Image (cartoon, rainbow, N blue to C red; front, side, top):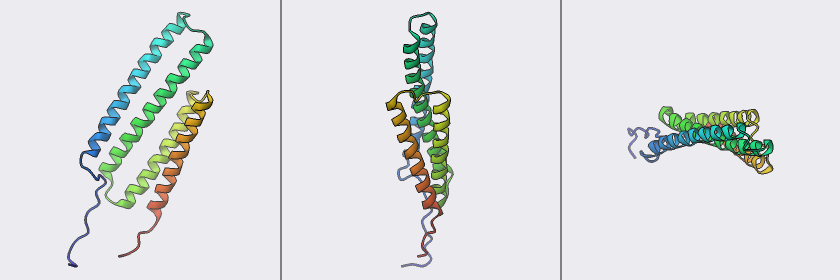
Length: 153
């Protein structure tokens, strides 16, 4: 074993093309969000003309709001990981940043979900709780891994 060998520098991406795949996912999610907003506007115009009843409009608008929230969430998640992967220089910094990203996304998802009243149906609430739970668990786990000291070799 040669003692003059430097340790390999930290590389976030296991595959060089993975970052571009994430960036493509961001663009696709933003496109999906844009289409959802356009669809919402079309349905809102139909509702204003009296085509829908108030209860049907509430159901349709809640579905579209949930779809928009999920598209926005996925776009932010992929964009956050893309930026994180480009900026971090150490494994510890990567874990801490991943934890912070997950916790920030959980807070944003909860706030946006409450503001847009997307959790009106039981299955939507279950989905919201599952996503929040996963974000919180992943965020705390990554933070704890980042705070843990690596043993000296």
